[in-house]
Length: 205
Image 1 (cartoon, rainbow, N blue to C red):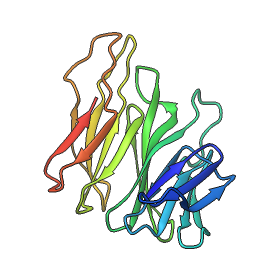
Image 2: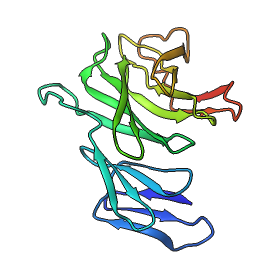
Image 3: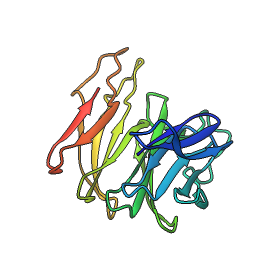
Image 4: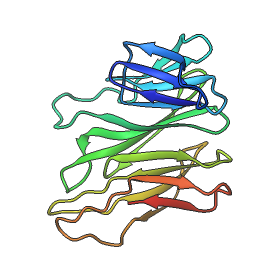
C-alpha cells in the first residue's frame, strides 16, 4: 500500500490496483505517513497532526505538533516529515519552529514523538539549530535519526544527521554533512535511510 496526500484529499492505494482503497476528501494536507501494518494513517494539516483508522476512515486522535507559539515570531512552524516506528507504537514528526534557531537568522528545528495508539506526547527534540528535513526509525525501532537543512547566507551552517534513543529521546551521536561551508554555500541533508542492521545510515545532500 502507498498513501498520497494533496491539498484537497488523502488516498491510500493498493500498488497493484488503480483504484484507491480508502479516500478522505476535504482533509488535504502537507505530509502523510502509513503505519507498517496498514491500520493507521497520519496526516499533517495546517495546525495539527491527525491519525485515522484505515479500516473505516474514522479519526482516532489529533495532536498539536507546535504547542503554544508566539504569532509575533518571524516564521510559521511547519511539519515536513513523519514516520511511524516499525512496531507502530510511536509516531515522529519533524520540521521547523517559529523561532530563529541560530546566528544565521533562519528557523530552528523541532521533532515531536507521540504514542501512536493514544496520542500521548512522549517527548520533543527542540534544541536544533536548523529546520528538520527528515525523520526515520531504525528497523528494530531502537534509534530515531533526524536530518537537518543547515543554513546558507553569510553565516552558514552545514546540515547534520543526529541519532537519538527512540525510547527516551536521548541524543546518542551527531555528525555534520560537511566539516565547514563557505558563505553563500548551502549544505543540507535532504533525506536519510538506515541500513537494515541499524549500524549504518545513508544521507543525501
